[in-house]
Image (cartoon, helix red, strand yellow):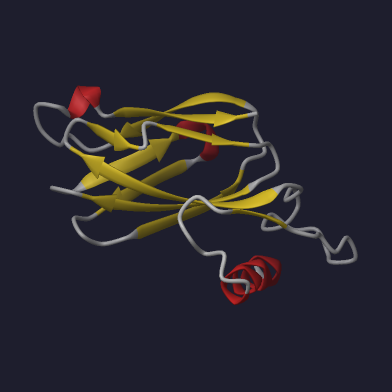
Length: 133
């Protein structure tokens, strides 16, 4: 957890906490291995994601294996749920309130991002894609 906080502070200090900016990070291998820092070998990637009744914006999130991914999710209209099963992510997203989700992209492949709460007629179309290369 300390390592993650250090990385985030570094990003803020460098002024790189802007939409879509990727930053190379250096890993200090002398730190003890833990679930929070075991597989961070890539970039820190921050994505702003908007959810609405019939979809996601952007529809596709593309990152590299080993990236530290931070998704800032917000709803345009109503309560939604963001789920990426393969990463054990299932969070509620409130209207006009940012829900931050952080994880290390340590599984390669193409994964469905779905709304896990029934949000109306367009709910079945609310599908996005996470691609980890």
